[in-house]
Image 1: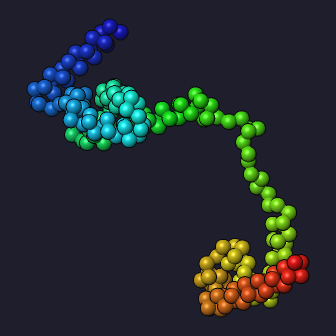
Image 2: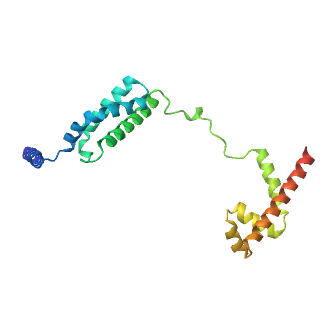
Image 3: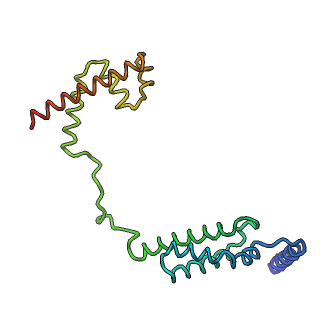
Length: 193
């Protein structure tokens, strides 16, 4: 086991020497070199996210620490500022979620949640029954168009193809059907009112 650790240390040392010899910076070194230039913008971004100077200081510093910890995931030569801003944004979102859970805002008891009843109320059922009876009273050609387009969701052209009629015929049948159903519903409403 010690031999494996020793071999890994030698390999890392050799890698660092090769990088130094050829002038390429390691991910961590490029991050360290670029932090000073990017930090004012990073801090300003953290201030925009947090709306608090102290929290912005903490977020910017934590972002720098996380960037150095995760240096191996940074691709040298890419946009350091974008990478840091992404880390800051994710850390801020994680902090918001954690605070919501700590304050009890993240989870609610099932009894406290007001879930809407997916079933329609009695008035909606009554109205739907009236519309359906009006549609059933339509002539067969109009009823078929209404069911294909409004119930099954076919486009006008698809309904025309299914019924083997021109698209204009489908459109006129639908217009006539709407006019008839509206008139019948208005008459029923006037009788009830």
